[in-house]
Amino acid sequence: MTEKLSDAERDGELKELLSNGWSMVEDRDAIAKTFEFKNFVEAFGFMSRCALHAEKLDHHPEWFNVFKTVKVTLSTHDVGGLSPLDVKLAKKMDALA
Ligand code: HBI
Image (tube, rainbow, N blue to C red; front, side, top):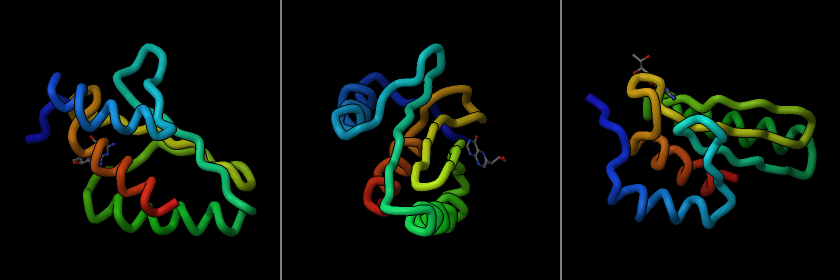
């Protein structure tokens, strides 16, 4: 069963993500980041790569794509807030961008 992020994890891994373009979402225990690409095809390719990893993790982003921009929000619905899965997927998305 997935647990919420611990205080230690928030001080550690989460803080690292927040210094790397991710930010806390207002009024939600969630993180968000906007990825910009050269064009739509690049943006969609990023989404395709992320989709395969999300499926492998069984953990899925909330995301919005318009043209070359992909806005991503991560939270774990099953626990109503951030879990280690969100940190894992955020790191993977940064690596795939
Ligand atoms: N993705 N972001 C997110 N949060 C979840 O709680 C979640 C998910 N993908 C799949 C999933 N939960 C399944 O474990 C449940 O739908 C059964």
